[in-house]
Length: 507
Image 1 (cartoon, rainbow, N blue to C red):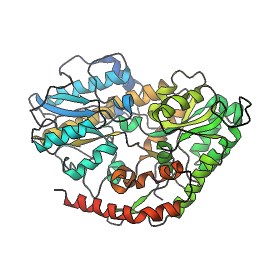
Image 2 (cartoon, rainbow, N blue to C red; image 1 turned 30 degrees about the horizontal axis):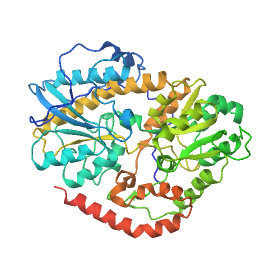
Image 3 (tube, rainbow, N blue to C red; image 1 turned 90 degrees about the vertical axis):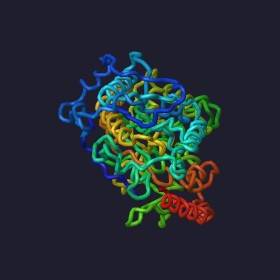
Image 4 (spheres, helix red, strand yellow; image 1 turned 45 degrees about the vertical axis):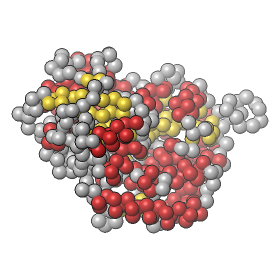
């Protein structure tokens, strides 16, 4: 099993980012939204930097872009589609100042990038999950060159690599992948070899908002389980937060609140889950993987499936043999309304979710805390935090006419986000606005440092849905991993070979 080796000790003291996008083509349809340069700085966005601990000095971390870069007000066209998560994704660009810290930091970043590089960021927003793909295909095929940069949801944008829609940016003129604003672990796992078609890190704030985590109700934790928040935090920091412990807590939390004699929606539960996204995150965060890498860094299916067999039993027992676990319909309404409402009503101890899920709890009367998903067992060295496949990754369109300019824009955008935007979201919107204790900040840092993925999850649709193996098993209410794997392994292996061949054929 692959595990991230991340130090648990250090506080990250995060995040502010200086965004710049300088792109390529000059032909473009009427943009839905644009930004203009040389406007007054938004003072409210600087408040995040003022909370930054001096020792990390994130706000003053320098990039290596030449100081004299100037592209003479050239337009940089960015296709910014909505992914299936909805509003949680729409935080990377802003049209005006509205008094919200993150929005205003994003807007100020746009102005800073435009002014610094002498470019004009032109944002083409698309409110459809799928139509943007056809728009991009048609644009590239016609060589119109309307778009330079694409922010695409992971589960849609990855296949466009194989259609030669994107450029490899591994050796671009101005992007420095040694800088802290790039998530190299994620990009390496989402690639074959050293190529970089999908850029990840501070360049996209949805990478942070869609990082998995769990929430707990401090009041019910104490009143029902006789555990303090501090003791649970310490359990996490000691590396003892495991599937078995979650199972025990949930068993002890169940109560037939309405006296019906059967488990129903009105009762109290340890946790609410769905058989879709919850299973993806629980599995990878527990330390399990469906793929490994050869000595040459080529992805391959795991050969030792025993850990997956054991994990399937644990997950099945949690979902279907534990009275304190309520399995809800696999819908956005369950994740965004029903389960959060149960937590806020003190009728649930734990809630699975993402960093953005904190916004769903802003009206919660009881205090809550944030912890990672549990590990498989204590033998797993570190926690992991899967970036959901709705998170938007950034790519450069193959028809881009000025790749050097675009690479400068991307580097400036990622760097400025790191300095200003991410801190605004992370330190103020997440840590300060929603989280109500000091220790949670350390736990949030731990989770952020553990952001990861699995090649099988990134290219799930191209690999016969192997990245959704656990959701398939839990949806079918079965723990027979061996039978499922044997029935699908040959097909998945052929798809893996075809996928690797397709990567090799990309120009």
